[in-house]
Image (cartoon, rainbow, N blue to C red; front, side, top):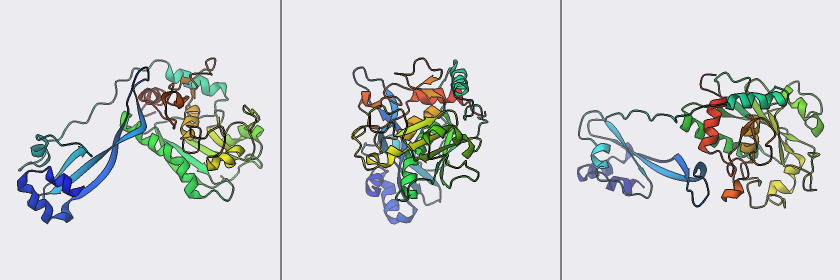
Length: 325
């Protein structure tokens, strides 16, 4: 990578680059994501296709530094040479890009109505401008490691970065793996019908995911009901007993090879429910902000194997959770 990047610099710099390897910092970073559209598939930003960008930082003889950026695998334009490696003076600073021009309508009213319908103990009313922390409770069976639980949180980490990249501020952030909070009601995580007690184990401005050692009684396919359940009453979401069966090893007939599988970022879908979003296909009578069709709701209709937020979803978040609270 270093040799390729160096070849893009003016000839006068090549010897200096090769002689000063210690002054060259090369690293790859995912800066933006995109999703191509075709036919009637809506164009959306997603985390399905990423572009690696190469940043080359060069320290010149006068100790001044410049950074050159170019997507990996693309030929840099000739004009980039003089911009990336000026002969003297300070590089010109580019103004920061403007955020999206978002026109809010009734998204926050819908979100508050959604939360009120389920009891009003969610995170929408608690929003004060500080990022909502997403934690996962260490109450899973012993074979589930902390590394496994961190892996379940990883799609949320990417979502948090996606939101900040588009809006310029964070709405959610990943906390980590936590112990069962002190004072949790006895049996709160063993009887699905007591899911409403889970609000007692979270703090203000926090969302928690936890293991429910019971099946969802709404057994829609005769195999134990849903893998996960969002508890909009409480700002919590549970991995139900079925999740620690065949699903954990990608063997559940419901979810093999699709977005409902373990690697399909199901937690992202459930998290949006806790942010007062509803299905766009089958919850039409429910108050709430609609999820994107083919993104957060039924991503398989767009060929995706993961749940993902579109730009429209993120813009709606900005209306529900305005900057500063």
